[in-house]
Image: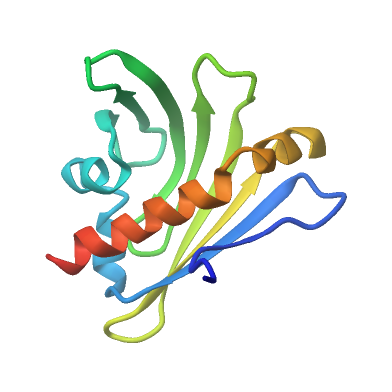
Length: 154
């Protein structure tokens, strides 16, 4: 079965381009990235901080069934233009992965459909390739499928 979220990793480059078309209006898709309650639903994580403005910061934590934090991530917003784009850093705490730079662009396709394009830049080709060895493609597809499911109910 073809995954709906597509990942393009060109050989010899330290970047990924991820695209996904959603059966959601543009404004609703964007809310999935700016409203903490919606973020928590589709990402399955706790939003500790989400300051959706230029130079604002964010922090998420994922816990196991016993309440132990198993994953934390954080970053800073460098640009935040509602219904258009988000530029942010992304860091996974306590991992060997370095901070990455992410450009998210939101595009209206019709009144009921929209597209997300994520351009992610890593410090090196090797770091990007390490990320691709993880179940990254499967994970982002699962997350985007949940995003579609959660917001389809709104």
